[in-house]
Picture 1: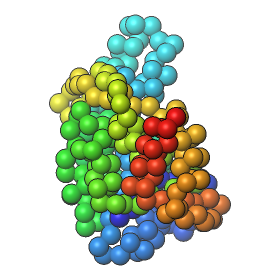
Picture 2 (picture 1 turned 45 degrees about the vertical axis):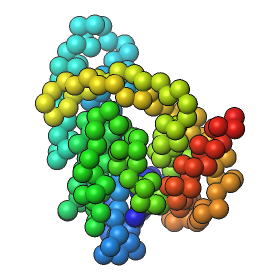
Picture 3 (picture 1 turned 45 degrees about the horizontal axis):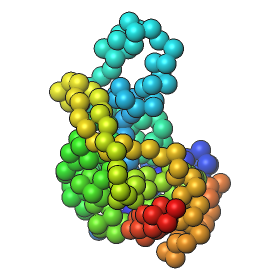
Length: 235
C-alpha cells in the first residue's frame, strides 16, 4: 500500500503525464496493491489559511459575497486543491477510485483496500486515528515522496495528535449539505520541515533515489510517525 505525494514539475516530462505515473505505480503495486492520495479542499473552508489569504484584503461585505459563492463539497466532483498537486487530482479521478467524505481533508484511493481506507472519515477527525491517514498507519503503508520536501509530510499530523494538551478549535466549511461547523484538533504543519530532517536522520526503513529530475524518498508511515512523536517528546 502506497501513499504518494508528488511534484510532477520536479519529476519532469513523463509519457502519459499524471496518468502515466499512476499506471506505473499501480503496475509496481500489483493486483493486491492500493494507491492513496490526499485530496484536501481548504478552499471551501472559512477557517483555512488558504481562505484567510484569499479574503485578507476584502471588506466585510466582499467576504460575505465571497463565502456565498463557495460551492458545496461533493466527493464525486469537487477537485482536490491545487496545493495537493496534479497527481492527487489524477488519482481522485482514476477509474475505480473511492474518496472519503470529509468536507475539508478528504483522501482518495485506488485498489483492493480503497473502500477500507476511505469508507469512514468523521468531520471531527481530520487527520487522526479514525481517518484514512490513521488507517494507513494501522495497515503499515509506505509514503513515496516524489520531489516533495519533508515539510509536506502529511503523516506527521498523527504524531502531533499523540502529544499532550492537543488544542481544539472550531472549523467552518461548506459540506455536502451546506455550511457545517465542528470542533476538531488544531492542526498545523509549520514545524514539519525541521521535524522531517530529524526523522530522515534516524529512520532505518528509508529508501532514497532519483526519478527523472526528482529526489525521491520511500518511508514507512508507522516508523516515521513513531519517530516524529519520540523526537517531539524529547524536545
